[in-house]
Image (cartoon, rainbow, N blue to C red):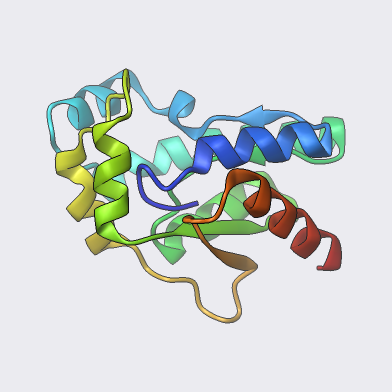
Length: 161
């Protein structure tokens, strides 16, 4: 989980390979209308997000039940989004928050090609981000670390919880 440009897809694919399980890219579950809205520079509302979170959560739950576990990417910016995902999976869910400073995120977004999420929406995501509460199943990691270091930390944490 994390804002656009935090490294979710890179870490997610590494984790899935390391854990030998399915990887679900959360962006693939957005509706055509939601993608068009973001591409036009408009942030999604909660009404836009609910069906997306439900589709993604259901797919994660199905993949986890079929394969024993699954890894997915999702911004999951607010607690109610994380709660919705947990409910939609109907299973055990853990989140890894990739956190870094705005300047780093802007730099990453400027060098990312072929993605519909414009850098102009970064501030709306940062404004929406609700840092996880202590009672949530979330590991926060500094996204400045290398993907392999992040992967190792996430696996070590997941094995201990």
